Length: 199
Length: 148
Image (cartoon, chains in turn purple, red):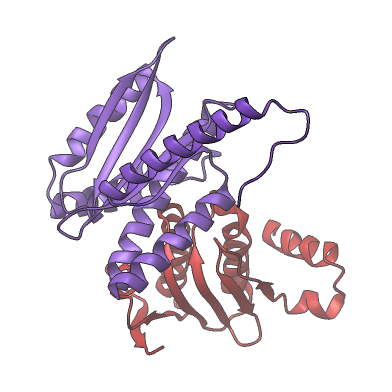
């Protein structure tokens, strides 16, 4: 269906805008397809949205593979990573546009899943995370389990009701390849942090 | 006891009368990120069904832990947990541990407490989660598959 511009609108400009949007969306779609991206999100993320996307993701993997374990693993990694971003933004008191997340869930050629989640963070926080991820990536499954159980028993700081560090260890336990982390410099003491988990 | 008054206040603010206060049940409907909860005082049973991944665990777990503490301190009867939980995020796992720790304390003090962990046979991840909980406790902890 072609939507006609309102009378009085400059027709030529409206057509040009539509064509531009159409072209870029189409190339974006080609990119999603070639990268085997199942679901992606970029913008302010609410708890409801996390639930909705997670539910769609879980159903899709369960239905397409008939494997509930894979579906639950990907779902769980996605939840922990998205909630970590929400908790970080809240702890830092970020308002939009900094309190946004970029989340991409893709399939690999060999039938695995990759959950990538990114957000804007203060540079020292990003550097600390880079170090933390590289420490976790060096541990085997037994060592990760021991660390997980130890962390589970750590007293929580007062007023903190989130997993506080446990989430990332749980993510690392579910990966089939070492956890990856990168930082892209932004302006004014901030970086864009990306964490990538292959399940 | 502070737990007493907390529970009493809760019932009163809910508009329940004297009868309810003597057997404080706790019923919570499931949401997309929290399980259905039925804590039945008379039956001595706390049942949780669904998935649990609220952003902040106090949203549901504070009242569950309060109920468990109250029951163990006052009922003088065994407490049984029936759990059908497909998924718990890490903060919910922490909250479950707070509950299991109270069961262990009761068990150590001679008050029988038990957990029945029921998992969907198609979801071995839930069974593994139950196993990881069970390894840290000595009270009766049964894990059983359910067909769906």
